[in-house]
Image 1 (cartoon, rainbow, N blue to C red):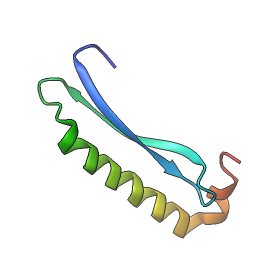
Image 2: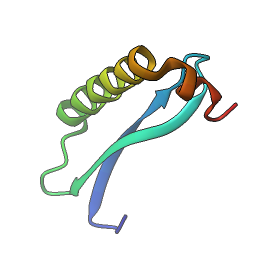
Image 3: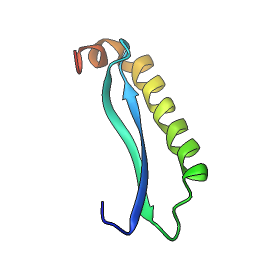
Image 4: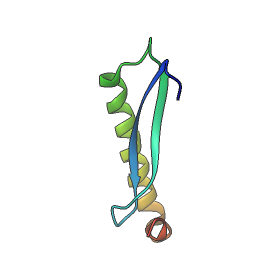
Length: 65
């Protein structure tokens, strides 16, 4: 990230609750609105975590273990 950028990130968790990755978004500070961006990135991370656990729980459980 550069000084003229802002960003937010939220974790992706496996079936054990272990963080195995993250979803982030970075934008120029002129457009950076954390109160608008954070809920979108958080919802995306939650959806990806849920989908990954539902579709490949056994594979994802071993990641980060």
